[in-house]
Image 1 (cartoon, rainbow, N blue to C red):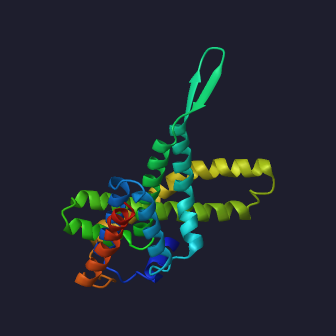
Image 2: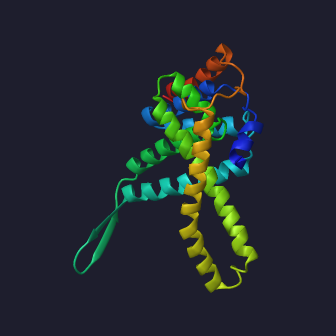
Image 3: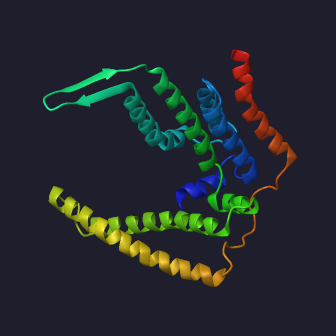
Length: 244
């Protein structure tokens, strides 16, 4: 089992029903995208408070998960601020009004934080079962679950091949490292696909109809949980109304 899946099983919200987490993160994401500024900032703050507070996700883990999309949002916002023109003999650039870039950044940050709230607290197999019960086609659920397992297979094969490469002296100097990276890149996908094919055949034999039937490891859907999630989501529009 991957470390991320192990962590969600030990988190503060591990017993929460995935439907409650889906309502919370989806509501915050919609608030970040649809609400006027500073709705995105408020949604991001609420998502981070939930992660660091009741969900008990370590700050280092939140920061590590947030850094790649944050860098992407910063670079994408810069493209809205800077305009570049390339001529035959010159390169000119100038700055535009940063308000559009700031609005896009705060909405992207709020939506990203809301999705991280779901990713760091809900287990994907159980979340797919909730979506399946809401009418999502079974084929889409099977593909999503297969891609989820494929990521674990790729990570496992990469660690095994990296360990073998290190034990064989493939990291002694720069030339050996480059040779090892090439060999790892070439062999990883083929070995991972072969292992994934064996895993897929085993899963088909266990459950020919599709998703595997497992015992739920979360509490049943409760009115208290839905009300609490709705109350947290409602903080964004209420705060916007109070600020105006």
